[in-house]
Length: 208
Image (cartoon, helix red, strand yellow):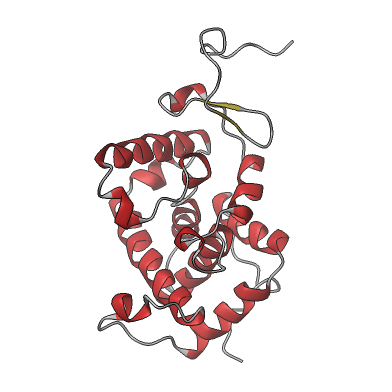
């Protein structure tokens, strides 16, 4: 018989993952983290509170593919950082930023889960890197702009500001991501998390 979780004898879990792992929202350290638990929810969780057809998996894959576009000299750690940055939403959910500001404690909960997941996946040093955080911040927002452009989202005019309009290479990447099979998208994200490079045969990043 498998060793019982410390909390399982005291209370029922708050959630069960697809692989059967017990989740206690207030005690991230009591949850076992396995990479296989991320593929299904990333595919199923919809961005923009469901007001656009774009999954969290598509978002992370897009972010990974944008790194070499904007940071040509970036190393594999940057790919891992952007692939990782929303993984905690598999546990706590993808709460839109407009709502989060009314739930100040939620930010702390997100941070606790992100740190726990990073530690268990061997990415804690990358997660804590100020340099990688800056790259993630830019790539995440650029992906938001591109997604809204591609989806003709009504909020596009609010996020584009003075940023450059999508270039040909970004549009090509969007075309790939929008039609790619979820297995392929997961391979892109999981390869990045494992510090493996993007495979050109999967998503071509050349301009030809």
